[in-house]
Length: 459
Image 1 (cartoon, rainbow, N blue to C red):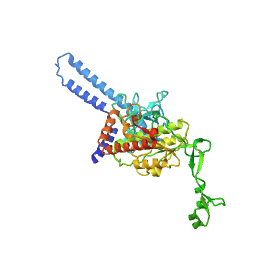
Image 2 (image 1 turned 45 degrees about the horizontal axis):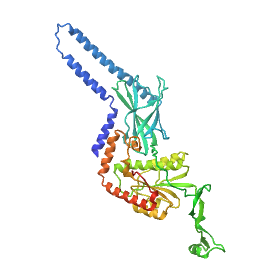
Image 3 (image 1 turned 180 degrees about the vertical axis):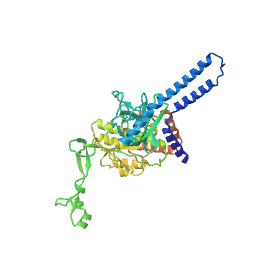
Image 4 (image 1 turned 90 degrees about the vertical axis):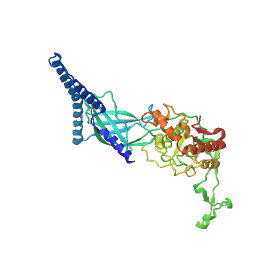
């Protein structure tokens, strides 16, 4: 553990070395070259001696000129930046694009820095510290093509590939001043305070057989009447024509008031589809990389895809989260649902019995981590009123491709990282237990939903 922390500290310290590996290679090559040429034995009386010495001096002057051309503009830009930072302060802004685009696998980050002076024919690059201990790779901004040749501000975007669908917090940025030859790279810290969430992509799924079950408005009539509760608290004051068998004697003994229970009534209206997605885990998954990253990402992608499918078909959809998440200050309901899904985590707090309200639910999404016994009890009680969708997590590895949801998962070499997760999952002691649980869940859904069984993830 201490070795790992020491390694990380050394790695982070290396970010601030003012010269690059290219300069080291250049300096070593130049030193060896001059050493070999300087030791070359030439006859003192030869006509080439003076010419050779002159060429050596020219080469040395050229080398010094190259290093000066590289270093001086970087030094000037760095000193200007530090002067402005102490004198007037630096404006550093980070914002993100919340709309889904063609770059679904990446988060578009917009950055603005001023005042800052780009080195002559050089570069300004950045590195972001996020979630307290993680750094992005060093990157350059995609700047506006209309930017002036000489400007003291930089604005641009960066398409950032991130490993998980969740909320990220950026605490610091490292600004690099680099020369045209990339010999020198002087780093400066910039404090930052920004947070954003990566968004699940939309996966194509077939239309689901679902009907609204919750009545919030009486403008949508349904074909099949449904039972709903009566008036306030299901009780009303006793009247002469009421059945005495429905008198609530406990209330009479306490308050001396005669009240009767109101029977269920048949309601021909239902306006909203209530969508439940359970992130509850019946298993101990702590430290299991495959479950905590690709499986969780896949469940979020399918949950969002189901929601989008219902919305596009014209349903009024209410997503009911099973955990508390930070409030997202937006008036856009779909964006709020996307934020809630993206920031959800596997948990072992609220099980299906506590979470799902069977009187309201139209669709319930369960995963390979759900308790099979709880699912069976819920389906027995709900009858055929609720559509259950089983998201088979272990098949997510089988369905991977370079343009699908798996692009969310990996920062560097995708294939190698996929193999790492697959090897870890193959050796996981949970693998056999979860596969067995998936078999039970599939049988339960087949028993109670028959031809209408919805299992996402199977081939």
